[in-house]
Image 1 (cartoon, rainbow, N blue to C red):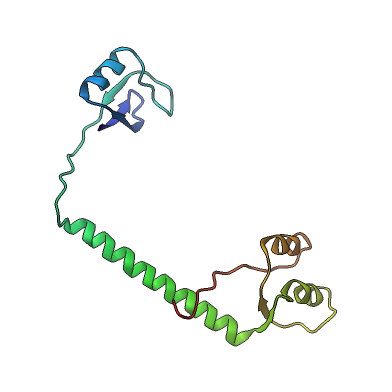
Image 2: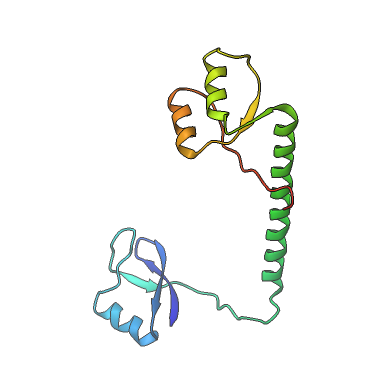
Length: 142
């Protein structure tokens, strides 16, 4: 398979995959290539820089290192959110939807709570005008 960067006469860029370069020429001559944006059939190959694979590509290694660093930072932020919620709220477990309603309707004292709720329960709370926010909850061991 060969991949070409293609461009139409309106300068919309897209890519096409062909079994070989002859397949591209055949499809172009038959008018079978169409721009997915404007449906123009005036298609040509765009200028491409070849990608030469190397066993130890430093750019890929850099990207992988940055991704790992960003994931670590995200986990740290999520742990900090968990710590803050646990330190400043009361855990009510599976009673969360019930307790949120009681607080909203003034049946119990106003306080910060957290706990468990299904997506359907969260949706119902939102429909009642009760502001709740599902948050990612990382494991302590992770």
